[in-house]
Image (cartoon, rainbow, N blue to C red; front, side, top):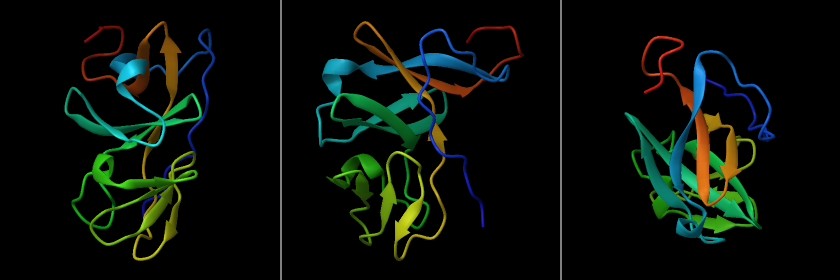
Length: 130
């Protein structure tokens, strides 16, 4: 079973791993509370969440089926997959409701102005911005 590290909040001046970089995903105004939103950065499909003004990012697709979580339902801090009703904790990515058993990958997020930035693996050589 593949497990991911829990999401971590990043301060604007914090460092991220050298093999990651913050790239823009969406505008703050694009992601309303309670309404997950699909985002694509390079070849990564993500889902962005607004929980009371704090933004989170997870991999886009449910680990149980091929349903995009942006089409799911938020209940508190849980996202429910529309396909089979499995749930994940948005903040940690932890699979918490059957039939889901594999955690979601989570990504560090920061907000600069109206931009939501997500720390994703570099898609080019280290030191080269995409």
